[in-house]
Structure formats: C-alpha cells, structure tokens
Length: 113
Length: 114
Image 1 (cartoon, chains in turn yellow, purple):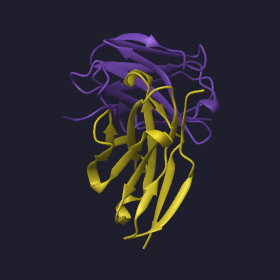
Image 2 (cartoon, rainbow over the protein chains, first blue to last red):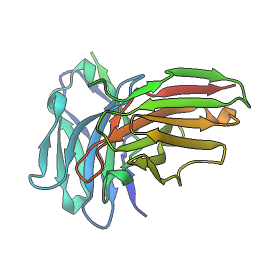
Image 3 (spheres, chains in turn orange, purple):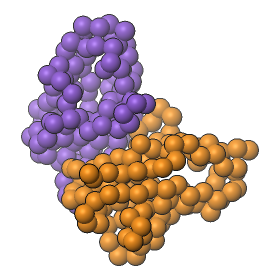
Image 4 (cartoon, each protein chain N blue to C red):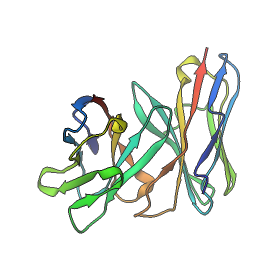
C-alpha cells in the first residue's frame, strides 16, 4: 500500500545541535516530496519541496532535505537548531499531482535551552 | 497576499447542532482542499475542488458532512448534525492545480462539539 512514514513521533534536541527528521515513502515511482512545519495554533507552512534534479534541496529557515531514491527517503536536516524551530514537522508526498497529497503522521520537535 | 482565510478560528457547539466552517482561498488559486486534523488520525483529506467543482469527496466521513464552493473565492464545510467525535481542527488549503504547486494552508478552525 502507498504510504508515508515518519518513524519518530517526538524528538528533543538542544539548541545549537544538528537535527535530522526522517521520512520514508512507499510508492511505485518517485513522487513529489514536501516538508511542512506547523507551529501551535497555526496551519502548515511549506519548508521545501523536491520534484526532480539535484537531490539536495534547500528550504526556508535554514532547512535542507536530501532525496535518496535507493532508500525511498527524504530526510529533513538543519545544522544548528534554534529555539524557534520547536514545532511539528510533516513530510508529504504527492504521487501524481498535488490533488493526491498524503501526509505523514508528523514529528514533534522540542528544543532544549 | 492575505493567505488562506478561515473562519471562525474556534467553534464550540452542542451535539446535534449545525456547524458551518468557512474558507477564502488565495486569489488565483484554482484548487481547494479541506483537511481534518486529530491526534488519533493525523491529517485527513476530506474533499477537494478544482475550479469550484468537487473532484473527490471520498474522505468525507459521513453524509452529515457536506462541502460547497459556490465561487472561486469561497467554500464552506458543513456538519449537520454535529457529534462529539467531530471535534478536531479543520484546515482549508488552496493551490494552483498541477504537479509543482504546494498547498497553502489557513490557520484552521478548532471545533469542539460537547
């Protein structure tokens, strides 16, 4: 079955530490890939997206993600986390077009001082 | 650009009452989506429209739920009658139809049915 998996429900990192949030997908072909961030009481905001080309994509707020076809993964990274990055992060895939976008269960990020 | 605007931000109602949630998409966007978010089920797509036409409502949980898009700048999601298990945050999102267009989300309506 087609699916999006975010294995980590909750991650805690110290401010200034590096971050990697995992996302794996299960689809027949390479889908369109997205990462969104949701702050408390807010809607989802697009961080970055991948469609084709360079497998390392840069997003807003200093985030980047790397697409690895062999691992069916699209992990989100940030070299140095800021307290304001505390939020919930959602990986999303769109197998064919954005009308069929599927979201992972989300990873909640807590940042320790 | 004001973004996607949803109203109300919070709605508290009693079981059996009718609830109407409203959404104004970003001007120029021709696709509109309604999602429901709960702790148990995460983000669920309820229905989406292309050019004001409902394309897929397979995510609508029951006949108590209905959605309309009378024009390109307005959509409603109605629950009648409401039940406590409908309590959730309901998001509206809009986009340009097509492969490369991300969804732009509103801030959601938090619905509590007592």
